[in-house]
Image (cartoon, rainbow over all chains, first blue to last red; front, side):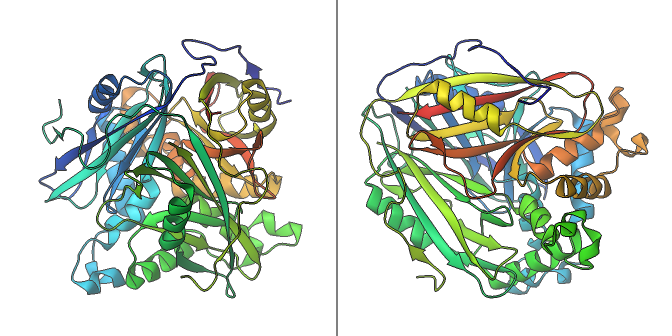
Length: 159
Length: 159
Length: 159
């Protein structure tokens, strides 16, 4: 056993249930004017959960586009500035000729790389009818190639 | 509420159901001859879904090996070239002495790092009996240490 | 069809079942003394699974804190050294003035970036009452800003 580990008995509203399953689906739409932006979508996912009536289960939240991310981190503007700067260092937008993908006529080669660092999706536990989050967890939509309508999928399964 | 957000009512074949659950499992096997390659496995996961009979739920697709990835992005060869080049910059294969892991007799230290950037797994919504994808989403197996048989796990749960 | 692909019939204890669903939840607590550490939590997740009584389903294991990761890779100390060194190159801790997030009084800007590379969560298949792993897969808690109590959430759904 790991020396740092303390296994608590079932905490909160969790525990073991035994019922029929239900599923829920919704699309969230975005139209970011600039090229890149981080948008807090936690209130929207909360609303979806209330609408679903699911009490125990899993929520999948994923970008439906391949130049965008859904990720969980802090709702702090300084950090978002740090992410923007860091991702631009790891995968610079310019020169656009840097990416073979841009020979297709696109200029978003960098966005496909940035999205892999930040991830496509998050899976969040649903416990007692709430998103089962730690103290600072918030869900963000990360746009890396804006200027057009794009979607996030919310799919929930549970009981 | 976020200014970019438009919450649509349940779109497509989703919605709320209330039935018993079923699960499905299959392994996909690969034997990449070279060291690195990206393989489109979307048709294979589609086939699994048809076989499962699941209409609403979640599909987990994960590499069962720790020097390989499963990820979702574009089926475009220029982009795959860009990923290959970028990952080799972030975590170069050589000199193999660069990685302490290679003191075990392996030469795949870099592959364990590349796999973390691209990810181990994807979770995809199943809606109306189909993989619930945006317009360009395709599932890829990313091999970073080929030359032997390796596996991807497809696990689906739903109803 | 992909030339490398061989689709096996249902292998192992998987297959299609049709029963009611159950869910399970537990928190694992950590208190890492130093700033960074990787801890193998596979035995703890195994214990959770035994306790849950779930035979077929999905296990979500996620960091509840935004400067920590849960990821799957090799239980090899040389590799962990390589991860530590590589993450420090990609997102150095110092100078702490490098990160605007640290203007909030924190010194953990780097930890929020490292966590994105290694990921927040893993989703693992449950098959035949076991974590459905490849030969070397082990689950790790990655701490990037230790010195205080932090949690991992284990949520399982299935039958």
